[in-house]
Length: 428
Ligand SMILES: *Cc1c(COP(=O)(O)O)cnc(C)c1O
Image 1 (cartoon, rainbow, N blue to C red):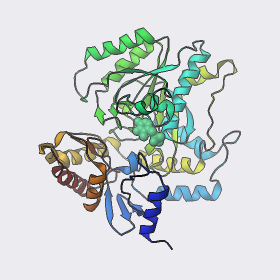
Image 2: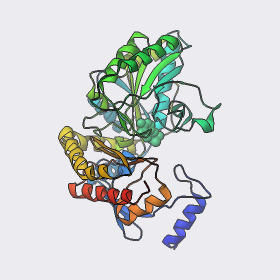
Image 3: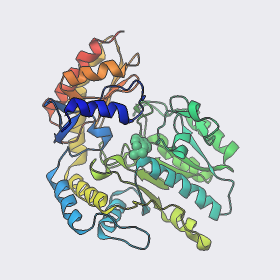
């Protein structure tokens, strides 16, 4: 039997964690179990979860209904290839996704992760224009400050400055960038911004397959909230210039912004929509790319087939977790539940706005953000949060909460107090 310390030493020696160095790894904490909003470390300490494990564990950990769904599925079929074979969990899930997703999205492609669902969406757009006799339309336009994943095509549409472009320039397709949407959920629409998009479309539409954007909230690229009305205008411009509209709902989907999808804050619908993260309630890796008949049938013209097929496509265990998670979600009154969470975070985080170190505090739906004036040192700040009994993982200047929807007001208060204390100890 290895001791916990021996495990942690091995972890340091053998394992890469997200965005870390092998020679100077940041501290990692050994987790024994997690229930509800409590993460228990191997030394017995309990941390309140403010992250939903990167925004996915919306119903909390170890949920009895999702556990049961997976256990039942396990006795029937844990996996089978999706080429030539199919199964009820995938069909049920596709039916539900189509029923709850915005507008005329009618067709579903399952893949393993958010990044891959973005790759799939971009490939759909390129293949669509190919069958439509416009093979030069194979590039994408996207706002700065976006984040769409870490695989190559997804990276190519991430923010060119705070993303990873500088490391991979030459290896990445050069895409087209417009300014980030002006912030403020209710800020008046800036006509200059729409002019910038129009000018970009006018100059480059012959090469542009699609416009990809995170609707209403730009997440990992800066936790920026913008007026949903921009998306209505962007839809009209895309139609005018024959450019497909792709929404990346991987972070915002399944209730996070107070509606089932962030798209539901608009009165339009994208041609292609990517979902992931909370799809399985954070139990397993699964993502989906949804599209309308125009794109799906367009690709299929002249004996066309869509050229993608992951080994673990439509994994039955993951689909059964997703089916259970969505049926739980459908039982909520999402606007009520998420508005309550928003109000709890607003009240609890308000004192942080008075700290000298803080640039802005903003909340929207189940997202609470404390933006600092300076970037934090993660190596130093992470253990402080753990000492205070909370799990909060900042990045750059952003300390944020995206808790499971089942969190209590008291737990939100504990998270916010920890942020206040840790931030007040930061240099100004
Ligand atoms: C997390 C995220 C992705 C990438 O998803 P992975 O499952 O990590 O590959 C893509 N787009 C957005 C908006 C995300 O938040």
